[in-house]
Image (tube, rainbow, N blue to C red):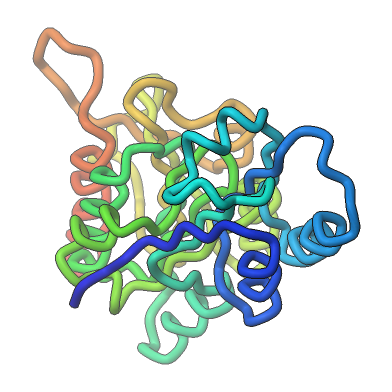
Length: 246
């Protein structure tokens, strides 16, 4: 399958994209634009909780494929997002305890694509990513997933911490990866679980980490202090798999 990212520009095109239900990851508006059409676009953006960034005209000129942006450019996802309930329903339909992977601060599309691929193979029921400071479902992500994006639902949420709290009320518990944690082989990782992974640079954010029930450490013996985020996710995901089938 061929995946294409969509860059929409022009007021009518962007407004119609919102009204038709297209998934818009990010909206760029020219500083000072407050006329009627722009206000209509902003109302639609607010309904879908789209991230809006105000930039100078020169920046829009750089982003514009053909220079006809009319003060607004939208980046649309190459693939549609699921809802968190879709992920829970996927587990329910299989008669399995939910296994969800939450990604914090993952901005590299190749990492996200690899994570989607590994999560699917490990039997995870879905991935949850935040709307801010995270890469969306771009064409590069879709391609790197090697087709797994067609089978694994990916949900995008406004606040990971709040989502964790909501999922705890539904019976899930959460473990995050961090070098200050307990050795993963000593932990019970069975049952309805959410695995939280951060970037190799920043790790899991403090507020998100505080919401987790446990912190797991991957044993490492080299001279560098971290693994690639997708590799770390794969190691922990398959420890969960091992415990589920043992």
